[in-house]
Length: 318
Image (cartoon, rainbow, N blue to C red; front, side, top):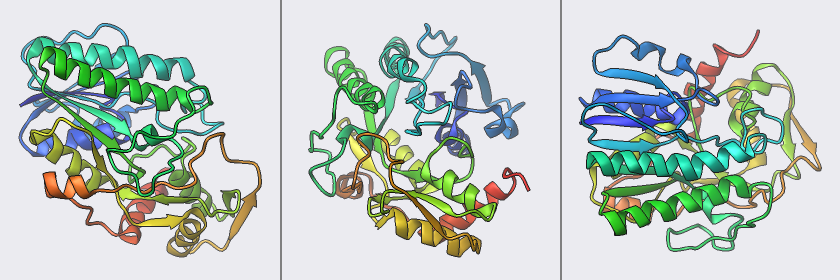
């Protein structure tokens, strides 16, 4: 296939480029480099089966020649209050890429008679009242809160994707991505993994907001990419959760990071650091992924962390 990946120079987009090229496809990566980086795809430059286009997807998208699949991964994704590339710092751009960008990407899929895969998120569930979260859960989202620019953009993108499927017959898929980590995450993007690993490698205490009792489940990037590709190759149109159901508290996660890195800095608790609407619990129900795709994660937390830490050692200033 000839595949367009929007957000193709980002953390997940670049890993998708690698995987789909390895599967024998040709790939066009499109990115405006606000949150992505050419560093993530530098090793692919010059290949005949790879092309990079710098472009903002909420401007009209034109691609010459046939396209067999469009994977829409363009969006800020960090909820950090301080990271310059987080969606709290780019609220209007986040809404535009989720709405107009998705519209434009769906337009390409329709025009080229291509299958379309939307990268949605566990954030569509908001601060969930159901635990773990199944795809049938409609969510508990504040439509006016500070996080709504991302949550509602993704919820709109899902609705638009299904509208194109039902109205125009576009061959669509929707993946709801839960917390993912691995090499190529941006050190300063404000998410918990780069925050903790960066602090640990500098020998600093890890900053835990609140009492650390809030929970997350972390999926290593290679597992997530495998699930996304299986979904792309499937015939499933309804949303599918992809993530790791092994849940642990942020405090436990910080202790694991310190142990794996040998960091003597310990943990520093900060009372008021959490953003408004930060979910207390987050864990996917992956029953549908197991049944429909034959997928479940394989990489253990410490194994994945060692790979991630090895990457960050190359980018954290000595």
